[in-house]
Image: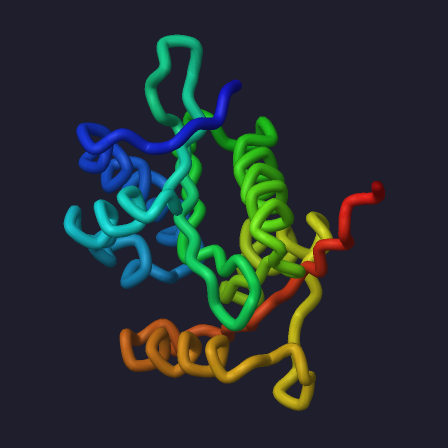
Length: 175
C-alpha cells in the first residue's frame, strides 16, 4: 500500500469512499450518519490544494481510503479519515494516520487531534488503540479550536450520539 497526495480527478472517488465507509453505521441504528452527504467537491479541493489531502492506493494506484486534515491550535486535526469497506481491517487507516503524524512532526506540530463517536467500535476505541486519549471538558488540551469544531458538529446533528475530542501527542524525533 502506498500513500500519496490526492489528485484533483480523484475527489469524486473520495466522496464514494466516504459513502461506502458510512454504510456500517446503519447496523448501529445510525442511519442519519450513513445517509449524511460527503463533503462537497469544492471543500475537498480546498484540502487538496492546501496539501492536506492524502490517499492510500491499491496496486492499480486507485484510492481505497483517504484522510484530510487541517491545523487547529498547533495540532494536526484529522477532519476525516475514511476507508472503503473492501480495504478495511488491513491497517490502511492506521497508515494514513501515521503518514499525517510524520507530516505534522515535519511542520513542527506537537499533536494529532480528532473528534469522533465515543461508542462506535471503529471510532473512539479504535483511535485509543492508536494512542489517542479522550479529552475531558476540563482538560487544558481541549482547546478553543476543538471546542468550536465540537459546537459546529453538534449544530450539524452529530451530537445525537455521544461524541469525544481526542488527542495524540507527537514526541519530537530524536536527533
